[in-house]
Structures are given as C-alpha cells and as structure tokens.
Image (tube, rainbow, N blue to C red; front, top):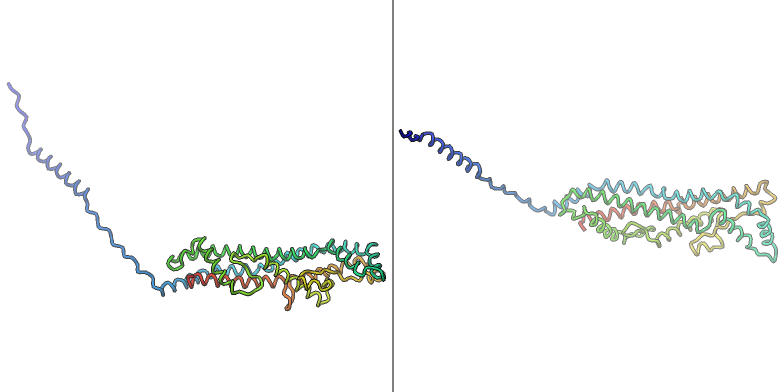
Length: 331
C-alpha cells in the first residue's frame, strides 16, 4: 500500500510569504529614509567702515590696561637703575682711609715740599694726589663705566617690559576680526608693524635718550647721556665748591671728569690732631657729593635719575603713538 502524499498547507505558506515580503519592505523603507536637505546658511554682510572704526575703538580701549601696566613698570626703572651708582660710590668710600694714609706718607710730603720750591714741579703733588685717588677710591673711567652700565640696564629693562606688553596686546587683539585689526595677533606681524610704527613716531621725537625701533638706545646715544650726566654733576660740584672739582678746565672741553681732590695737606699737617681721619672724612664727603650730583642733580643740572625718568615717559608716549597708529589708523 502506497504512503499518502504530503498535503501542502497553503494558508501557512501564504502567511510566511507575506511576512517575508513585509520584512523586506520594512528594511527598504528604513534603509532608504529620505535625508533632509541641508539648511542654507546665510553669510553675514561685510562690516561697514563705521562698524570697523567702532571695533577698532573697542580694541584700543581693550589694550589700555596693558599700556598702563607697562608705563608703571618703566616709571620705577629710573630709581632702580640709578642704584648702581649709589652702590658703587658707597663701596668706594672704603678707600678713603688708605688714600689718606698715602697722602700723609713721606713721599707725599716730599713732593708737596718740592712743589713749593722755585725749581720744583708746581703740579707734581697734584698729579700724585690724583693718581693715588684713582688707585684707592675710583678713576674717571670707572665712573663713566658705572653710569653707562646703569643706562644700558635701563635700555634692556625697557625692551623686556615692551616685549611683555606686546604679548598681552596680541592676546587682547585676537578677540577682534582680522578684517578689523589685521594680523596683529600674530607675533611676527605685531613686532614688525610695531617696529615700523615706532620708528615713524621716533623720527619726530627730539629728546635726550632716543631709542631705536627695537627699543634699545644706540651706543652713541648712551655715550651722549653719560657725558651729559657727568658734565652736569661736575658743573654742580664746581659751582657749589665741592672738593671734587674740574681739572684745569679740560673736563668741559672733553666732557670727561677731572677728578682732582682739593685738599690742603700743608694746612692739615701740624694743625689737625688727627689729619688722617680729617682727610678720610673729607674724601667720603666729596664722594657723597659726587654721588648725589650724579644720581639726583638739581633743577638746572638733572642727574641720571631725572634723565632716565624723562626717557621712560617719552618712551611711553612713543609706544602709545605707535600702537594708536597700528590699531586706530590701521597702518
């Protein structure tokens, strides 16, 4: 007897087929979900010249604290740098006693005696006195070097302050559109444009310590300032009758120093109980007078502190003019 043929359940097959078709359609619908078209972004209109000018004024106001801070730092430089002279002079007072001992030596007395003889060298003892003063206290060259080093320190400190200021200015300007402030937020661009603007402003500035575009005074200018400070100090001492005076007028012609110690040794010897202490005290007083003259001067002859303070104020004015030109005038 033959087995019965399997019967096909058409209902179940139909359901299965419909399920497969439905699943396929669902996959197609989900996999091909329409993508929303990109939104159109509107380009902002270009800034008007009036808007740019307003933003530049805002940028100028933004950097003012940076300039004020730099001004304050430069204001204290004059006193700080002048302290070099104060330290130098105070240290050299220690040579007053050895100098006095040498001035009262037998050699000194013999040269003094010869200078009063008809056939003697009238200036022999003065030259000897000056040489011993340079040996034990200080020389003209040493004074010039310490004043020059104070000016050089001032220049270096000004350059450092200025570099820090420009760094802060760059960071502040980075908040503004490049179309307004250009590429001033870039270090190389900032320094190049500042140097150009500073040079332009500096060209019309006629003052003692004129600096170059990098912020440093030239060696020639430093030398002029040193000569002026020293000549003013010597003039002040000569007028006031200080013991450190001009030597035969040569200092005026050469803008140098004639450090001649005017001490009446022939008067001191025999008339003063302790001539060595007397001479040492006079030398210390003379050194103190020269220190005050070099550092402070007076109304007519300003000292180094006044020279550097004036230079700092003028430097600040130049910085303002240069940055104003770069930012407000966009040049």
